[in-house]
Length: 433
Ligand SMILES: *[C@@H]1O[C@H](CO)[C@@H](O)[C@H](O)[C@H]1NC(C)=O
Image 1 (spheres, rainbow, N blue to C red):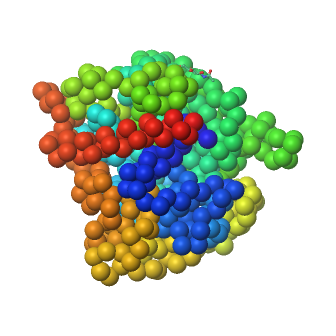
Image 2: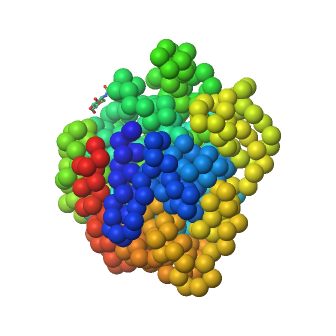
């Protein structure tokens, strides 16, 4: 399990703890029950958004529980506005309407995308809704800075294949590269790359992941800095290649690795504890990383792919290897936050309250009705429909603007609520790592 994954898992667990629901955890050895069939990226069972991006087909009730995944789309993203970004409380799987799904608080500033981490919050995560099944992902970015603050640009699949760039805020001259096959921990997979020509916070650099069926190349500012060949990842015991090979989403994140109660190893790796009185918090109201452009270039699917359409990827067996993945014409869109991969047209509850208040429909949020189709109370989550909705917004106090010492009042209100999560996240990090 990677650190970011562990962190996200903890975030979900704590969110569930906050709303005191009967949480159901899942793993490969403990699949979700039929009434909450989808195992989220965070290892929790639910319906609706639990069945979308990150839904793990191996830990879900059945391999069909997760909704099919939208196919790759070649596109260059700029961020003059946040129109292409949907909050995770709104997105229902229609990647033609929203290219990205977010949690936390992304902002647009002078054409750049800002990922923000306000005081005592757990930061911001953006995931692209179009999966990549081999391709080139490029990000032009400035990292955040400061102890305990992590900026990440990664590719991650629903079965936890992963290709990473991670940046620790105390080392502004290093890009940490890493990869995982199906979440298997191997401490020899990481490699550090020294970034030349200006530190990663004040200078924008171009970071590229060139992911081919037989190799991965990490390049910085156009120069290849690390190459991993698939042939060198063969595991004789399992007779398979421990090489990332399943459809993956590009994810951008800013998150606190250095929380008071986190495991010591994580805090050390993160460069120490987060200073919530750091000058970036004082001057802008948040830590931030700046992405000016993301581009995704899709390659052809692997030769062994089973091709029966051109809309979505599905897993056909629990091997999760590239030869077992199929391209189909199946829809990727859920009708409501009560729908699942095996009941995609399930209607939202008609009354204000869902029949079953216990149902988990957005990882971290309860209530089947919240979101585009529901119009219901959104259950009993701490903020309900308003306070906890840190969806895309254009109100900001950007790094370029002078004098602002914090965000808008509404933002402060939200931050306050976010801090409840942060404390519990910290506790759960401790428990889980
Ligand atoms: C990379 O550098 C960090 C310090 O910035 C260190 O903690 C980590 O162990 C290094 N990783 C590798 C693989 O050398």
